[in-house]
Image 1 (cartoon, helix red, strand yellow):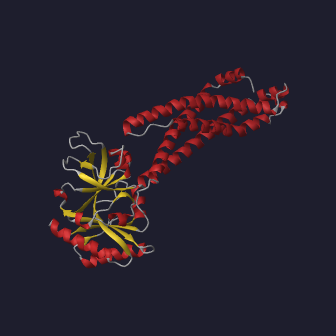
Image 2: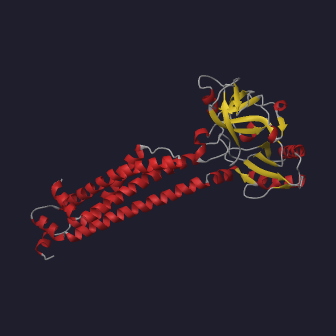
Image 3: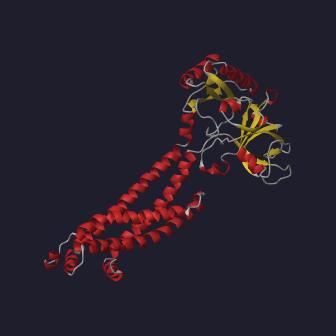
Length: 411
C-alpha cells in the first residue's frame, strides 16, 4: 500500500482535476441513486396484480347516440349484455362502471361508525351485477356472491345506499383489523345507512395505476348496482382461444343489434393486455428514460476518470521512471494510481451520498415521492467506487509499464 502523504501532495498539485472528478462522481451518485429508486417503484407498479384472471378479457366502451332518457339507455344496455352472454365464444359478460386499470371510476371514503368524522380508508366503487366475479375471474375467499334479486338498476345521479357489498381483503383488513369484516357494516362517503359486507375477494385493484393511488391500490368495494345513462362499459370473458375472434365479432354484433351507438377510439375495444399496457405507458417510459440517463452518466463518469488518469500518467512519466529506477515495482505503480483514484472516489461518494439524500428530500416535498431507501445509497456508493477502480485500471497498467529508463529522458 503506497504512502498516503505523497498521494495527497500530488492531488494538491492537481486541485482542479481532482475537484472536477470528485464532483462528477458526487453528481452521478446523487442522480443514479434517485433514478434507480424511481425505476424500482415504477417496475413494482408495472407488475402489481389486479386480482383478476387477466387472460381472455375484452373491454368495450359504448356510447349511445340520440338516447337522452336514462331509463331507455338502461333497457338498451341490458339487451346488449344479454346478447353478449349468448354469443359463441363468450364465457360471461357484465356491464361495469369501471374495472382495474381502466383509467377512470368512482372513489370515496369508508367508515365503520355512522358518526365517524373521518374515513378509515379510501376505496374505489365498482357497480356490477352477480356476473361480475365470474367475468373478472376474481377469487371469493369469504362469504357469498350477489343474488340476481339483489341487483338494482339506477340513474348515476340517484344512487342510494346498497344493502349489500363485496369488499377486497385489503379494505376488509383496514376496516376491521381485529376480525372478519363478513357481516359487518360499512358506510360509504357521507351515507348514514350502512352496507353489509356479504363477501370478501382476495384482491381487486382500483381503476387507476398512477402513484397517487398507492395508498389504496387494492381497496375496492363492489356494489350490486347497474348504472343507466348514455355511456356504458362491457367487460367480456372469452372462452380459451376465442379472444381474438371476439375482439372483432362482439362490436359487430352490438352494432347490428342497435346502430344508435359509437364504439371508436383507442379505448373502444381493448384486450386486457392492451389495457395494462396503456395504463402503465408513462411508468414504463419513465423507467426506460431513467435507465438511459443512468447509463449515460455512468459512462461519462468512467470516461472522465480514464481521461484524467491518462493525462496524469502522461505528465508523470519521468516521475514514474525515477520511482522505477529507485526500486518501485510495477505493482507499486499500479497500486499508487488505484489508491489515488480511490481517495478521489471516496471524497466524491461522501458528497454524493449527502446530495442523493438532499435531492430525495426535495422531491418528497415537491412531488410527494417516497423517501429514498439508504440501501440504494449504499449500493450506489459501492457501484461508483468499483466503477472508478475499473475505469482507472487501464491507464494505471500503462503507468506500471513505464520503464526505469524514462528517468534519464528530458521532459
